[in-house]
Amino acid sequence: MADEAKVKFDAEAPPEAWLKQAKTLSEALPYMRRYADETLVIKFGGNAMGDPELAKLFARDIVLLRQVSANPIVVHGGGPQIAAMLDKLKIESEFIQGLRVTDQATVDVVEMVLAGSINKEIVTEINAAGGFAIGLSGKDGNLILAEKLHRTVKDPDSNIEQVIDLGLVGEPKFITTHVLDNFETSDITPVIAPIGLGPNGETYNINADTAAGAIAGAMDAKRLLMLTDVKGVLDENGELIARMSATQARDLIKKGTIKGGMIPKVETCLNAIDQGVEAAVIIDGRIPHALLLELFTKHGAGTLITGE
Image (cartoon, rainbow, N blue to C red; front, side, top):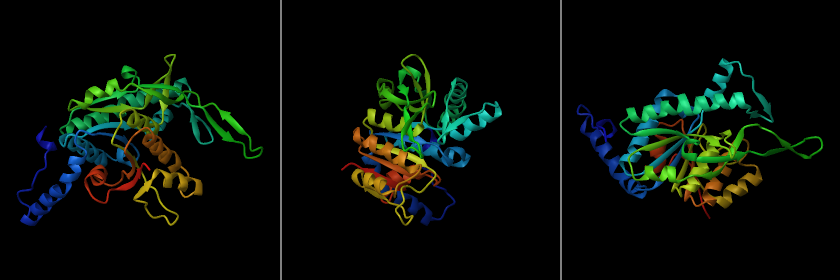
């Protein structure tokens, strides 16, 4: 592993600073052992991906996870970058109930941005931090076989469920784990763009959270870690819920405590747990080194959802 990935001590720092660093490493050791040789699927997006400094820290965290023998798999989003490119190319988007309809022209841009510029930027950052990363899309090696997403909405006037057509928006149907199994015995970190391959060769745009959850379940990951732009799941008083069971999470959705955009994130976590993932975490990606705080400290950095 390159020297940049190793812990360095500042020779000019006072002895107290060295002792603090040593104490931190000593306290983290039991947690590092817990994740040795374990697969961690990490969804990277939001402010963490848009902020250059946070992106560099994220890359260093991935390199450190490799150095302590964990097997990270990165799945990334890119909604703002896609929207910016569509605007630049003057491709107008239609929205139904707040959801973007993805036609062929749009999915071509989605693939170009996700599997192209964004994917390679993340790979470059990890490599620059001293790691070894390779970029993939869900189409490589038939990694993510997908089918068309079917979504219904309730008409507010008639209260009747109506099927909406979002075009080339898909959901994972099958994950070809053979593609990723080979990385577990190497020091290479896969960085995956959430593009799926349809049964007739179609290209499907897949939500990055959904793709990460499906990959975590298929790979029997120890953790699914989802970086977001909020602290985590909040209670009715707006306070962070540090830990909850799957049953408690479902109850909070029914009660309306978990609402809005947090519902699909929690449901993705629950689906992953149902598939055998030990636990899923919704993390505040705006916090520097959020991954390390969650995995290697007692208090974590978000909301941990466990099985029953």
